[in-house]
Amino acid sequence: MWNFVVNDAVSEIEVVFVPEATGLRSIVDAVESQSSGKFKVHVWNPYSRTVSDDAREASKMFHLFISSLILSVPVFLIRLPYINCFVNKNLGPFIISDLLKWVLVSIVQFVIGKRFYVAAYRALRNGSTNMDVLVALGTSASYFYSVCALLYGAITGFSSPTYFETSSMLITFVLFGKCLEVVAKGKTSDAIKEE
Image 1 (tube, one colour):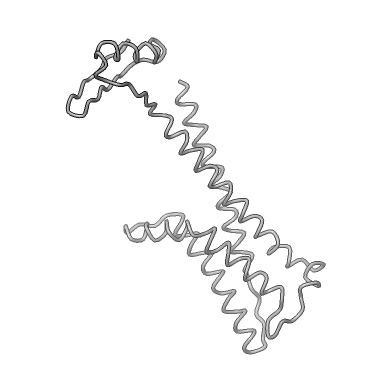
Image 2 (image 1 turned 60 degrees about the horizontal axis):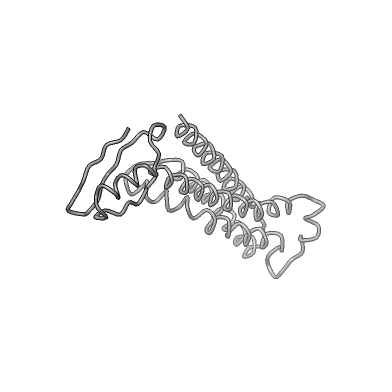
């Protein structure tokens, strides 16, 4: 069971059919034979694009999450006393552990977390707020406070506590949540397509 609409202006035929009742091969053969070679059939599945987009987005989110995790775990572990003793040496006015955290978290904040800044900018430009605005605001507050505390400690000799790991771990956890969300969306759309 199928019907079609012919558009001679662009030499297209749109075919609507029930996949359970009609096979693609029979539609292709019927259109090509009835048009006397005037039309060449290209089959386009409207679901194939969303499946590949879902898979591509899930893969991208997973890579971002893993990258963030790989960089965030050392930042978190540096705070532990038995690891901190190895990197708690001075390098000029700075402590090596603080410099390591600064470098690692800067990559997480501005390379991996760039998507939050872009989405937050778009939301604010449209006059709305969303979770990306909250993530960008919260992680930026933690990051820039820690940078200021680090530089203030280097200038004055009075070292304030830094909270670099808060920024990187927050981005990591939010990316983990986004990974789970994309996987759930993919499974939901697969279940809907099967029905």
